[in-house]
Image 1 (cartoon, rainbow over the protein chains, first blue to last red):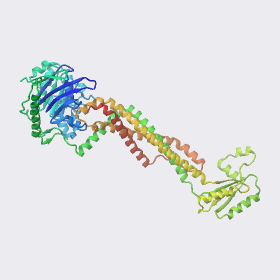
Image 2: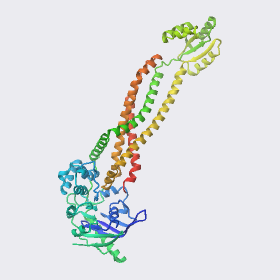
Image 3: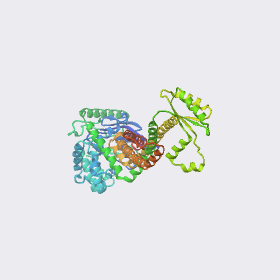
Image 4: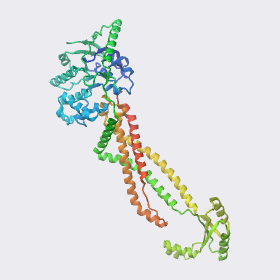
Amino acid sequence: MIRFDDVSKRYSSGHMGLEQVSFYLSRGEIAFLTGHSGAGKSTLMKLVMLLERASTGQIWVGGHNLRALKSNQIPYFRRNIGVVFQDHQLLFDRTVFANVALPLLIAGYSPGDCAGRVRAALDMVGLLSREKLYPMELSGGEQQRVGLARAVVHRPALILADEPTGNLDPQLSGEIMKLFESFNQVGVTVLIASHDLALVARMRHRILSLEHGRLVADQEVR
Amino acid sequence: MSLFRHKNKHSRHRPADDVTTPRNHADSGTAQRKAQNARWVEAEKDERKKGAERQVVATLTLAAHAALHRQVATDALTRLLKAPVATVLSSLLIAVTFALPVLFFVLVNNLQTLGATWDGQPSISVYLKNGLAQETVDQLIASYRQDPLIKDVSYISPQQGLAVFQQRIGVLDIIDELGFNPLPGVIELVPVSEAGVAELDQAVAAYQGRAGVDQVRLDRQWVQRLQSILSLLERFSVALGVILGLTVVLVISNTVRLSIESRRDEIRVVSMVGGTQGFIAMPFVYMGVWYGIVGTVLAHVIVFSLLAVLRAEAATIAGLYGSEMVLSGPGPETSVMLLCCGIVLGALGALGSCYRHLQTLVPN
């Protein structure tokens, strides 16, 4: 699903975000990406969803060489990826329902089809009863779950999560991770960036460790 | 278009492939790396083959397009109505900018009707010198009667002129105070209708030289002058319209820019979940269109209320000139045209703004 081949990213400031990173994440796999802040986790995520372009090396996502994708194809490419952010990036001027419906609206689903899928996604994260509320009325954990529902509502083949539990207490973090696992169990490829080593170790999945932009370890913990 | 393919819309997620993934990077030699890459490429190819039957993303039907546009347009309007004061202020600016050329256009149009209602039969007024002997006057009249170019001759003596003048305008007091009749005798000549402009001009020049004649006026001249002034004004109003149209574009573009700034987060999120540039720009374009519409409607309010105020004044002035002219506002064609202009300029302004500002906001 994701293949990095000797990928480096140098920012215009001269800072090396990533250096000669190669790895392969097969379809249906779940993996964690760990490292200190500044180790290159976010850079790697940005490269996968084409928020940034690699300086050198090749990246394949879903069988597509990202270097060959033109910028007008990028939106369509991103529709196949669900993204979860640490600060969940919800839109506060619209309801939970409208937030979750956004990716569907963008992909051009009819309102009828939309409603069913949005409710299904909200049900999955246990927030079906909250659909009419605004994000401000929800707790941090609930907001993150709305973000999660938004990431999966269009049934992407790949979910990227950048520090999805960064602001949550251990119990909530565990719940969120369980949700990621359940998505993975139905075949979605999941890549989660997290610096919470204890949590990551508890989950017992593959761990990719970054340090100063280099991939230093790739452990299979099963 | 989909870049990912799935077997089936409902059971698309398949269990992990049985790919044995090499995991030792740190010590990868060149040969090892090559072998590893080859395995990965094979694995990826295999994946694509397995799941290449069906597209995930729904293609947009015409109905879905229409529904989307309807929703975005309604959203844009609701957004404007939620901040009525700001909306009205911005729209007023646009309205005033629209109203100026429209008022000018209406003015020119009204003056044109004034020129057009004139009966079109030119006449020549021969103003005589003061204190002319009756014989000279009679001779002149006789000579005009013989002129083949002239159909009809009538003489208005200074006394008659004074009588008409007093009756019409009522300036008796002023004339009384003067102590004498300042009006000259006038011979009014009506040319034959076949007479051309050039011939009449020649005749006027010839009459000018005769003894006892002070001044000859072809009264077509003022109409011609009026018309040339009007065509100048018309061109001016077109130029004014173009300049102010540009102003409208800039005003709307700036208003939209502010809105883009305030909706940064939304734009970022939409872009990250796969919104195209067009999708991101759509609400702003509709916003520009609404501003255009509200602006033109308000411009009409401004124009018609100004005309209502001016109508009484205009009627008085027209009365003084013996005209039945009624100040008329922009007709339905003008209004429709104006509305279209508003919509187009609004969309243009918004598009320009999106083009300039979305580039910097949308991460690509």
